[in-house]
Length: 275
Image (cartoon, rainbow, N blue to C red; front, top):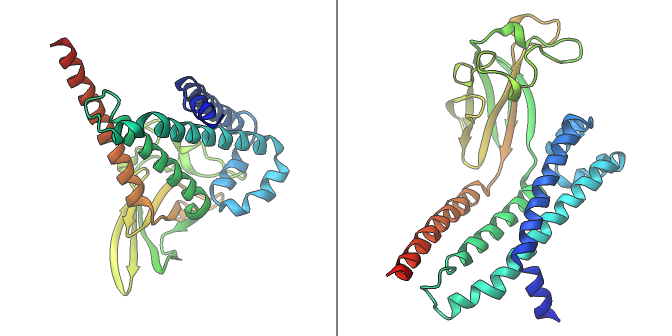
């Protein structure tokens, strides 16, 4: 009975269905955010720890159903990957069948599982970003570090990012602006990061964060608050402390290397068959 269950769980058909379901569920999430009016709730969830999610979920049953289903899909995908590794791939390594064309799938599966675990730990334990808004001269404390916004060099049209009474700007969301409205290369926030009485000059741009130790400083947008002069230009800043970052990206690099070795191994196996 157990062997039959493992065989069914490790099938490629099930893995393919779960992968497709995951893609569809992410698409549904995007629809809920853009068309269903759940964007603010999703942003809230993204800025607080997992243990603080329940009060929001109680008020948003549709969001609760979507998120629970998404977690279930990827939990089953993880179980399927583990079952496939246990039933089909680990025995190849135990029997040292190095010439088998699927031999490199074992480390690929194991690294994928490890990345799943890292994502889970990130949500449950690590993921507590601090989101703040800073004007020139403002300071904040983060993980024993003092961060001061020294200067903002904004070279695009500042009129497009003046906020109205509702907090909206003519430019709209930063991810939907054209390069003529907002060029990340031209707009920079300069900070002074003070660590143990040592001052470090740091720069951050959109999609170009500043990193130190296990911390990351991300500039997500710029705007001028409603009714204030252009000198009140404000940077939206996200601060993240993640001690798993180096390990996380190490797993991704190893996964990429394993995929390349798998392709190379398959090509060598096919050449042997041709010979």
